[in-house]
Length: 344
Image (tube, rainbow, N blue to C red; front, side, top):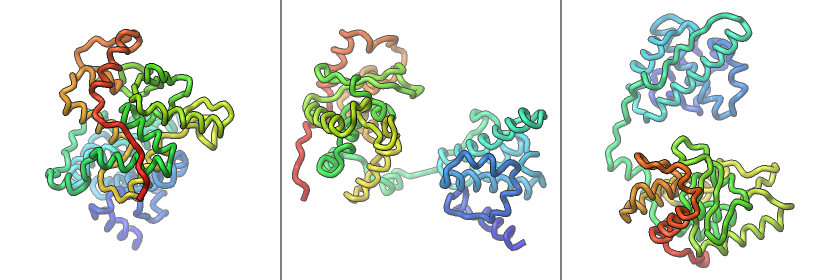
């Protein structure tokens, strides 16, 4: 009884909603059928987030409809989001994570019910189109207090610091900044797919917004010596490396989470308050090009995005078009040449 009261108190507290640092009593795991098998697929941190969301929904069903989690229907799920989730002061993305957690669990239950128990089960979590989440109201002043804007002065500090202390992070950060590529694309770069004469590299792309499944990105002339120096370094360290950023633990490339972690460390070391993650560099170069009044079509092409209302099928495969795009890249590169300075 005491455990249930503690759970109810946390359930009613908006600050505890789905938080991974809240440890609910383990006895409540029994309220969720197939819980242990379902949770084996998640890491420790994700485990807690998913578990707390499922427990929160379970208690909502008990209090309002006297149902268990397997008895819920589509109306129960929609009521849960309307009456409990949407009124909380959390971001729209966080509300979507609640929906994703429930959807993942019910998909697993459906698989168990139909493949093993041979019974029909309908996933009560509807399509995302049926959800009308309200945005969290944030004033411009609140956004400015939350995170400062990224500027080239900040970027230059990051480049200079990583150049002397974290050479791999320096190369990745430079490619993120100068090419505008996505971090997953940069991690997948193969050395053989880099052309130093025409200053471009191509790599596999998995984004839905991508122009093609192979993305072509350019880099500035002054960056060529740094890139060649890095390749010489990894060729001396690894036996015939395939990737530009080989993993020291596997025969493949590093994972995208590695640059995220490295930039977080750099941000803390330098005391930077601005948003500093791999995608912020892509946003930054796109914003700077926008300020230069670069044609929207070419901004999309340089970021390997499909421009709207433009027929660009096989655009980058044509030599003449790639030359034209390189010329536009050089003319509109918004950043000055990088020159390392001594660390103070």
